[in-house]
Amino acid sequence: MSASHKTILDTLQRVFGYESFRGDQQAIIEHLVDGGDALVLMPTGGGKSLCYQIPALVRSGTGVVVSPLIALMQDQVDTLTELGVRAAFLNSTQDWRTAREVEQAFLAGELDLLYVAPERLLTERCLELLAGGEIALFAIDEAHCVSQWGHDFRPEYLGLSILSERWPAVPRIALTATATTVTRREIAQRLDLTAARHFVSSFDRPNIRYRIVEKAEVKRQLLQFIQTEHQGDCGIVYGLSRARVEDTAEFLCQHGIPALPYHAGLSAAVRAGNQSRFLREDGLVIVATIAFGMGIDKPDVRFVAHIDLPKSVEGYYQETGRAGRDGLPATAWLAYGLQDVVQQRRMIDESPGEDLFRRRLGSQLDAMLGLCETVSCRRQRLLAYFDQRIEPCGNCDTCLEPPQAWDGTVAAQKILSAVYRLWRERGQRFGAGHLIDILRGKLTERIKQYEHQSLSVFGIGSDLSEQAWRGVFRQLLAQSLLAVDQEGYGTLALTDASRQVLKGEKTLMLRREPEKTARSSRSTSTRRKEAEIVLPAEAQQRFEALRAWRAEVARSHGVPAYVIFHDATLREIAVQSPSSLDELSHISGVGLRKLEAYGEELLRNVRAAP
Image 1 (cartoon, one colour):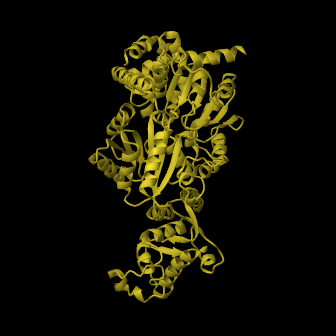
Image 2 (image 1 turned 30 degrees about the horizontal axis):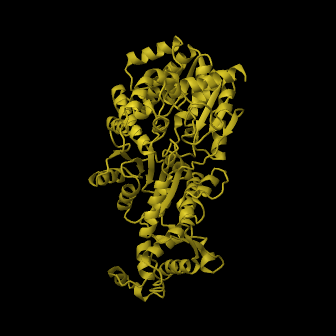
């Protein structure tokens, strides 16, 4: 074993309390310690931060970390401080005296890690500051933010290539949990990392169960999902609009689910306060727009729910990845319906910019719709988007309750014929709801007003329910066999691709949802319980006692509970029931600093538990 490897392994065990590395961590760390540049793709919860934290501790100088969200720097620094690491940040929340103290500590070589937002780093003052100290490495976190095609584009990231120009001898590492092959190439090009070594880990998060349901009364569906499967759990709910976020948070609170809103329309103080509560309290649900979540380190998020269709697979993967960072069972739940497709298509048509930009948005939406409508394993479809191939997972809804594929060609022809005849014979266009009434022969006031009962297509679709027809409409929109008009009314029109179906030149296999029964709901709940870690009775009592102790310590320190210890560490202590500091030191997550700070208290709590 080389001297550098011994130092690296010793740092992992002594500071962070882990016995061994996971996946590519060791190779990445050794490459960086030796002065190489790296581009790292690793799933959320895969241990990306260690890949730059350990080299920053081993190499001479301070590791400078570029982080896009100043609201999360405090928690990252708190976590490192608890481990005995000399860490600090520079951002706009500090007064000038505090910032000056941090700057002086950096110049004096008294910091192991310094976190800086990209917009601050690119100021001449900050660049001059960095030039006055010794830098161990640069770490660019959430590197996908540099991609102009990506879901989290940050213009400030485009200027970070200056780091290679001013500090060519300092190693750089760019890290992200979300990047296709194209995005990875763009990251390397824009950050001047074309010569960097690429480390691409598996994107699979096997502990997350993916479920996509047909949207009906989405707030009621969300409430039932939380009450039956995640009562008392911490979770994130994503919605597209500020109004939707506010309304849903209020609805959950009215029904006994503690929930807080988060969106850009709230004041900075309210956003910071709500985020702080979410990070520090157990069992809290945050309802948010996509403005929330990047870099969230909270390990015990048990579910991520989407009540509106995400715009891309990258965004969906990034957001669902915030669940189950601790490796324990978690759920990614999405409600998706016809109106989602109509709305997203219209937003793309109305978006400013060049045709190329709109086509890119359209292809991203097509991939997301393909994930929603697939009849095969969802995880296979999701990972294939990132060029990864796996066997069916057995832990998604399509694996657990396989949907039926049926020949929907005739049904599609009926819809397309109705749209054609309305436009050709009457010069009229209508939305899906009115077209379904025509097909099902429903004599509504509106149908009588327009005399649509006289159409040849009136009543030819009485064999399918309204819900079934909505599913067919949704899938025709998803496959661009129907288009949303660009006048903003949500009416439907034929596309160039419609002709093949109308003429019978193309067969359409569509997805039919499996019947939802009380039995299937119970079986889902049972499977979840089987998947959870169940502790013996005595160990469970010790675990609860340790959690109560941890909560008190966290409150006294003003930090989230997981900064003190993760649940996984407390569970292992509860099961192993160590009786000495030496036995405790072998528990994963108990490093030297935490052993010294909390070892005796932990042992007292273990002995005192029933």
